[in-house]
Length: 599
Image (cartoon, rainbow, N blue to C red; front, side, top):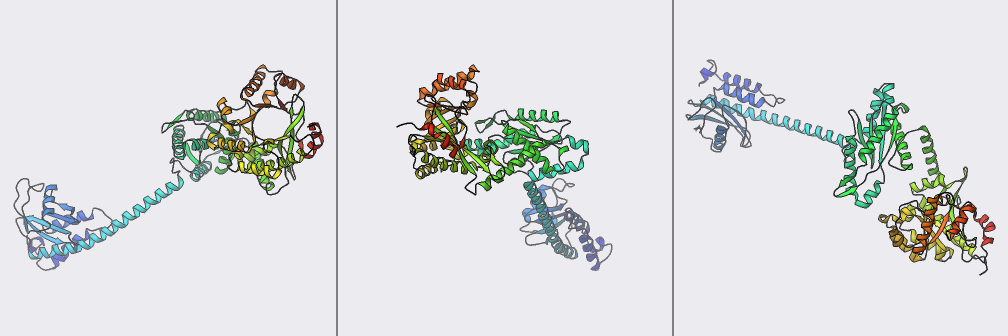
């Protein structure tokens, strides 16, 4: 090929500039295929049969060569010979080929564009043109690389933003939508639905029962796996268009459509059936239990209210025994507001010394009908509500942990009052029982607080009884066994309250240093009327005798009950038949005289 043939008869330098301009016009930094188009234009410009662009030791664009020929050209790159015999042909020339005349045009560094044709070497003008093309191509390739790098960086940033948005809106443990995304999705549904569709919108608020015990018993790693498995089960219950999310901790939500309230309750029951099957987590068999609250879109204008309503219903389900389904009712809102007010008032009351009072109910020795001690019971003298019944504030105090402070106050007050009474003639052997909630018993400072109350009051340690429930006695994971032993080492005696209503076994009664069993009032109330309850009381009295324990019957209200307890040889009794809880002053006036027994 000569300049006169390829340039259409032009022999001056304008031919090279014209061809160079045409080749560079093929470049486009926005088109990934631009380099390949440029290579094709180069081949056309100089009647070449082979063009190969080598960058960083790799062929990035080529014309007229197969893979084997590319490898041969790459091998020759270091020597850059003017003629190369290829071992195999280009696609349209199979077999042995004559020498390929080459022109090597440097790009950047070791990068090169090699142009070849068979038979006719490149003349001076063509070589000059190809070198100019190489220099221009190097600049263009840099631009393409820069734009490509910018594009990749932008794509990577976009992917990072998408991933960050997903992480921010989804729970990292289960992969479910998190609270903010759940609320946003519900709000969107509420805005897009008509009135009849909103009535069908239901929120199912799911909370795992006793999840803390799973963590305490098996560790947080197993607890996390348990939640992941439970989330998978919850997802399996979802229908088309349903939303499943994790709100926090062990709280999940399912949002879907149900044609009626009955259908919503049926669906919640179906969810429970799926979730209660045992889960094998790393070889540990865990029995799930879930409480569900339901709210419906017709009652709420926004997602926050709808979820809060379902949460309140779930809370009532837990209060009703767990593993249940409760539908939101507006009365629950009033109950929640009342509970919040009590919690706030409790916090305020605990800042002062005067609102919590010790009331005392006598414990009677049934054989002599004389009081031998008292149970100290807390009463709250609210400045505006008056005397608040324990059932109205004790559950709130237990849930919030405020009960620990209340129990500590009752312990100090009861010990101080007993010390005062024991100084009376004939009252030297009186005792007092103080309740210790599960929260209080789990407090590692309890033994030191008891020791301090004994020291401050001066009463002997065997004059103090601490009352605990069966569940506290059985909760080995909380370290309660060690706490019981430390208390007994102080000389304090332990009472199992409401005995018979829990699940304690003989092993626990034998294992732990318990002194007294208190028969629950639900059994005592049926004495003389229900043979089964009588049999239970008789069994408890017999069991206690065999183990060397004392029995106190709670809730004695009638002479018939007292007579039956005497027949069963029950040692002690407590109830309205003997006296209602009274203030310390009223107790000193009405009960203590009956305790005056000559030494």
